[in-house]
Amino acid sequence: MESNDLYSIYFIPYIILVITVLIPIPTAVVFDWFRTKWTKILLEDRMREKESLFLSFVCLDYDWKGFINMEKWLRLIGEIYKGINDIEKTMKVFETVDNKKIGYIDVE
Image 1 (cartoon, rainbow, N blue to C red):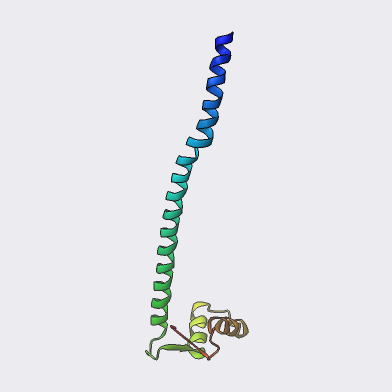
Image 2 (image 1 turned 60 degrees about the vertical axis):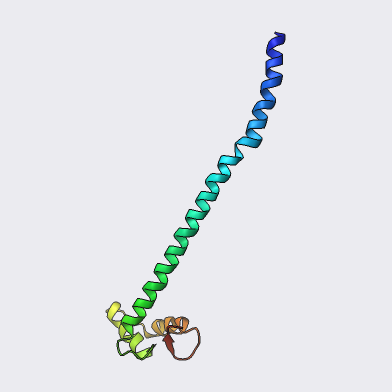
């Protein structure tokens, strides 16, 4: 019976040491890999979003003036949402997008 007690005195601190020292290392490695992968995915998504928004703006600015005024905006929304003619909501959305409050939307 005494040899079992000696083994347990040796084995229990070993288990505690493994749990407290060795287990966090792989966890940290996996977490770091996940964080870098997630950051890369977020950056790629933001770049795609900016590119898509710029290309959409270029398509909407068919007369190459460099901006979209209220007339173009109302025509666009009218074409996209046929049958829904809520001009007040459309104007509120335009005012929200026009963050400079200059009456038109430009790329900057």
